[in-house]
Image 1 (cartoon, rainbow over the protein chains, first blue to last red):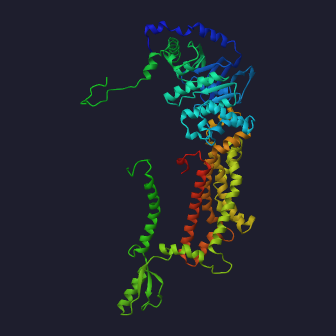
Image 2: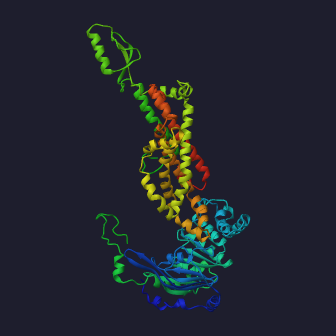
Image 3: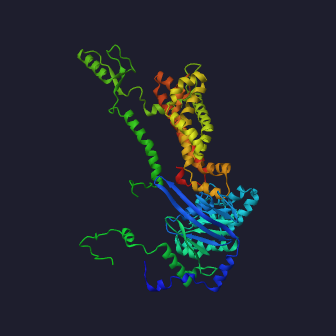
Length: 309
Length: 318
C-alpha cells in the first residue's frame, strides 16, 4: 500500500462536501424511505460449522436514490442483493419496502443479473413483455409499453431480434428494460456490467445514469469496481468480509449530474482513496508475502536480453 | 488447412466429402470382398459336376471339399468337376442387395396370408410410433415434473432407476399373457424400453436449465404454473427435442425384439422369413431399409428442429 504523506493528509477529504452537494444530501434524506434493511443476518450452515455471511446489516435507501454496494470478494454483497430481491432468505432481520415487510421475489423489486438472463426463446420485445403479461396486462397493452421501454434503452431496431443476436451491452440493456417495464419500486443490479469490456461498460454506465435521472426508480447496484461505484452512486455502502458487515456508508461528494470528466476531480479521487483504504487495507506483512509468486530467475544463461527491467 | 487439427472443424467441402467417405469406406470393403475372388471367397460354386455324384450345378461347397473331390477325380482319371470361387450364401454381393432393395418390394409374397414388404414395414412403423407416442405422453410430463420439483423427483426416480435395469424383452411373455399376441404386446415392449429411460433423461435435461432464468422470471412476477409453462418448458424445449430424437433411436433398437413377441410381424417377420428361404439379399435389403428409415427420420426431425428453434445457434443443433 502507498504511504505517501500527501495521501495520508487528505484521507478525510472525502467527507468534505460542497454546499451544493451537502444541500442535495439533506434533501435526499428528507425523501421517503423506499427500502429499509434492519438487522439482517445470513448464516450458512455447513458441515464444518456455521458461516456468518452477513452480520447485522442496516441501511436505508431513499426514494430515487442510487446506492452502490461495494466490498472485497467474499463480503457477501451478492448474497445481500439476492436476499433483498427475495431469491434467498435471510436467517434473521427484516426488510421493508415503502414501510411494508416483504419476503420472496415479487415484481415490485426488479433485478438485473450479471449473466443477462434473457429468455433465449423470446424476442427482445417478448422478453420485455414477460413481466407485463405476468402482472395481467393485455397483450396489446403489454406490447405498447414494452416498445416504449425498448425505445428508452435505444433498441427499437432490435425489437424482433433474439438475444443471441445481440452484443453483451445490448443484452444488458434489454435486461434493464425488462426489469423496468414492471415499474418496480426498487431495482437491484448485481454487477450488471461485470462481463462487459471497458468501453461498453462506460457507455452502459452513462446509459444507466440517464435512465435513472429520467424515471422514478431507486437503484441498489452491486459492483466491485471503485470508479463505477463512485461515478454512479449517491451513497456507497461499503461492506467488509468475514463476516459481511457494513463498514461505512459514504456520501459521494461528487456533484450531480455526473459526467466522465469528473473522474479526475478532487472529490472523486478523495473518495476513491477512501474506498481503497477500506477495501484493500494495508495488509499485514505475512499476508502479502503469501500472495507473492515464489520466483527464481529461470532464463538461460546466454539469453541475449539480460533483464526485462 | 491441416487435416488433423485437434478439435478444429474441417472446411465445409471437406466435411461433406468425409460424410461420403464414411459411407463409401464400408461399401468399398464389401465390394472388395465380394468382387475380388482371391479375397476370402471360402466356397466354390459348382458349374460342372463332373464325376462327383453329389455335386449339382449352382451348389456351394467348401473349397477343401472341392479340392479333395477334384484331386480324387484327377487321380482316378474321371471327368473333373469345375466351379468358381464364391462367398457363402449369407454374404450377397452389393449389386444383388441393390437389386433386392427394389425387387423385395415388387415380389409377391409366397403365400396369400403373407404380407408384402411395404405392409410389413408399415406394421413396424405403427408399432414403433404407438410405443414411442404412448411412452412420451406419460414420460415427458413426468420427466419435466421430476426435473422441476424435488417432490416428484423423489417420488418417481428411485423406482424408475431400479426398473430401467430390467430388460424390456424380459416382459415379453408377460405382455403376451396380458395383451394378446398382436400389436399390443409389441407396443408394450417398446413402451417399457423407452419410458423409464425417457423419464430419467428428461428429468436431467430439465435440471440443466439455467436456474438464473427461473430467478429472473420470479423477479418479474412469475409464479408456480407460470414458471413451469412459460420458463421451464420453453427453456428446455430444444434440449427436450434433441433427447426425443435420441430416444426414438433407442426405440428402434427395441423394435426387432418386440416383433418377435407373440406372432412375429413387421419387418422382423420379413427378415426371418427371407432368411428361412435363404434370400439373404432380401435380408440385407430389409436391414438397410430399417437403417435408411431411421436416419431419414432423424435428419427430418433435425431439420424441423432448426426451424422450430430459431434462437438456437447452428452449432448446438448438429
